[in-house]
Length: 369
Ligand code: ATP
Image 1 (spheres, protein in one colour):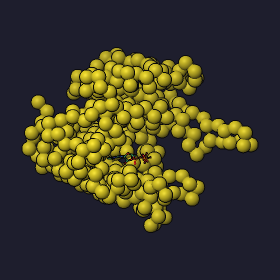
Image 2 (cartoon, helix red, strand yellow):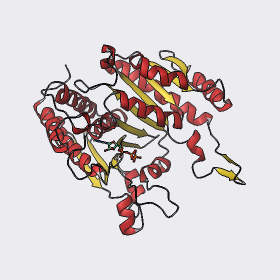
Image 3 (cartoon, protein in one colour):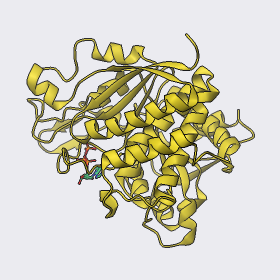
Image 4 (cartoon, rainbow, N blue to C red):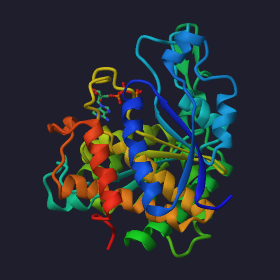
């Protein structure tokens, strides 16, 4: 197999997941034409509707098949009124995260030219940070294990391990270095914690600095989570790579998406030792599903992250270049052509935005200089 041919597990899901995946597929087709890459997509259905129809959230061997692909491209799954008998939500993406120990939830928060920002300050146009949400432990380790004692008190227990904190730190230092090389960011990793109150966070900070010492070229720092909530609103342009515990990352990544135009612009990647899953930060959006008005940008940028990861881990410069070209084409579509999706008050639909980005890739008009 050539390093430019990739087997993709494509999991569109339901609701707008299906619509934004179609737009991303149009972009990937353009990438194949332009960059000499070839994708072998294997579509794996799944989600809440699949559960209602078949009694299972994914087809038999769905998790195994997804894990055998070079990468997983995921739309969105889950539906408000279709739930497990115990009332919990259908979320196969969480099962995939667990199955493949996808510990690094990478959530870039980047200002896209032309998209109105929450902050009026001119410097907001330079926002380019990455929240890395640890995704396998922290407060979420208690999921399904909490206890209520005599209807009197409730307990959930946070878990922070040395092994995962070391992996997370290693990942973030490498990410900060790559970003410094490719986009001129400062090469700074700031751990977000609450080490002044909790022993588990004091431990996390200690292990973070021990592991970061292996990367003397990286500026390792820490910041309290409450101060970070303030500073992400006051001066988000000052931050680079921000690793944090699971629940903190869950909350602050939504705040981050709010800074740059909303969930429709927030891509994500879930990375493990051998697997990567790429999906928009938003859900199935039942309120707008089926109307062709979903903003596909988060999905398209998630596909760009997938190409960057494939390029880095499989040694394909063409894939790295293609990922960069998608990002530049998205910027050009909004910043220069003036496209505006419905979620930011515009009238360009899902298909239209996908086509515009695909055409820019084919023409090379937005190529990085
Ligand atoms: P989940 O819990 O599965 O993440 P959710 O119920 O929190 O999902 P979403 O499905 O992400 O929420 O939708 C939240 C709101 O944002 C909805 O009003 C939805 O219409 C809007 N929204 C989300 N994604 C997009 C998008 N890509 N384009 C336009 N609007 C979106």
